[in-house]
Image: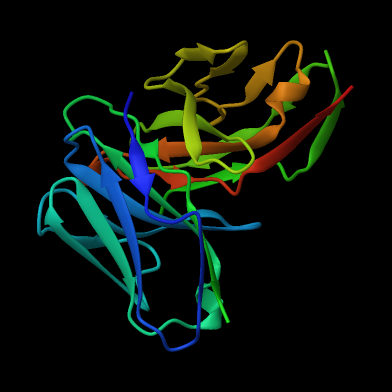
Amino acid sequence: DVKVTQSSRYLVKRTGEKVFLECVQDMDHENMFWYRQDPGLGLRLIYFSYDVKMKEKGDIPEGYSVSREKKERFSLILESASTNQTSMYLCASSNQDGSFQPQHFGDGTRLSIL
Amino acid sequence: GDSVTQMEGPVTLSEEAFLTINCTYTATGYPSLFWYVQYPGEGLQLLLKATKADDKGSNKGFEATYRKETTSFHLEKGSVQVSDSAVYFCALRTAGGGNKLTFGTGTQLKVEL
């Protein structure tokens, strides 16, 4: 089974801090994604990466950056955390295009910014 | 742009009741369609998928048929169980790179004894 592991289930940080959320997948997937999940808004794509050192903005990239130095690891960075970034963050991975491949999700990190 | 519309929840049913969760979409081209399920405290899991018109996806007693003429992909189950209580997300994937998905807002299902 594909395993997508997010480093923390719960995280509490303060306004202005630099916050790192880590995600690791064990299936050699090319694509990795970061979403945030908010009540009534569903999942919104923040950033995705289709290869090492490659990244593309999703629908809501403002206030975030990402890093993908190794194929199995995709990090989400909140440069200066703000209270409106309190949310559930979900990481996912999938194989490359060519035929349909499902996205596999981690269990999420519930981040609170105080 | 692409979008997915789901019925608002929560949906509350008694055990063994029939379930329908409506999903309609707007997309260019011919998207693949999916239902994901999120159990409490967990991430999303793929429940079923359909990749072309008239395809029926099925898994764990759930079914959904890709209806191109009505741009719909409604989720159904004949007899729900308490263990089906979860949030259900409809999603679509359009052609293009990256295997990106567009999700609906999710529908919470509560099944009671």
